[in-house]
Image 1 (cartoon, rainbow, N blue to C red):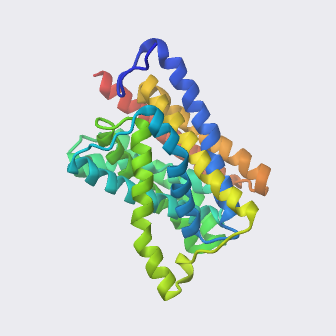
Image 2: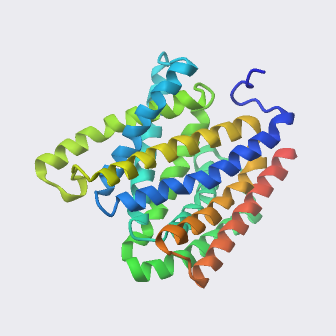
Length: 305
């Protein structure tokens, strides 16, 4: 049976969408594990470049199987540029965070992104936001502060990098929602990757000429190459998982499952780095998750009328 057109949902395939979402939540933190390992040996810039560079190579065969899609309008290309830019900012800032911070703590702070999306919907599109969702957002931000506070005391301004990720990723999601009407998942992620690499080249050139440490590139050891490759592999696989999760199930069904990612991130952080959020951080994580789930529930109720 042929797969449904992108954006369509078949009721009998909702369980398959749930499976893909669970697979995403299990695989996505592997990106962070590999990035944290690699960033101990090379710059955050090099990890970011490898994430998109290797993704281009990994997705070339998928593009040939899916049928290459290169004929898109200038408007779509401009949106792809924006998606790539927001993706770069999101990736760089998160790798900069997990280079020092526990993965689960950084990820929990990033989960304020639904609250930022709510604010952007109101500011950019005039969407109505009721008092209950405003209160839930404020409570969610308070939970984020609980996670930030102990990390700020230990790591300083590094603890704010996940907030940059959350803002950039919120814009990334807005652009992705618009582009999903024009491009299927494989083409969307492939074009974003090669555009991101091109966007990085001028900065890398300036960095090499001026010998700027933050933009430095090096030839790492084989094990670090493997870690960099795994960053891209985990990113490619997990993003395909979530693309198909959204293809087979409504977003309202799978969105609550996204919070499983914090659990798997905490487990992998402990397994590989013996990092474990403290009691204050766990309290903040629970508050963020509860507030986010309430907003998802309210969105679902409003959509049902």
